[in-house]
Image (cartoon, rainbow, N blue to C red; front, side, top):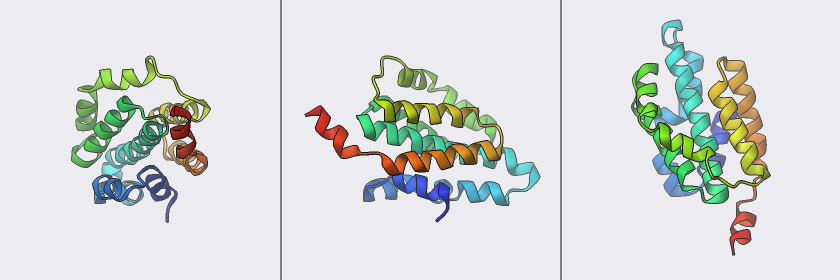
Length: 156
């Protein structure tokens, strides 16, 4: 299993999430970039980046039950699966700009949540495949160590 698919499976753990989020477009985003023609590389890179970003936001949402992060992950997932160009991705995400601002406003997170937010920001800043691959690898390492049950107990 690739690092990308590992990240997706760490982020989307329940059978319902797997069925809904792990679509062929989502699962194939990283491989699609690797196989893309030069003319199609920019779009395929954006799809891969959306898959990584969606995973990070979903991990953040599940870690602290953050509704804004969950809704933002859904926006990214929808763009990954329906957009037909980088401009279409920008248009879809731009419509929900305030939602992404909510993630950083009045949001209490623990150290793990801060690390996820940092990786999310670095995903958005990644402008080359090696940078995105590095963020992806760090995200897999972090996701493997997240303790979702501990955070549920903290809320009780």
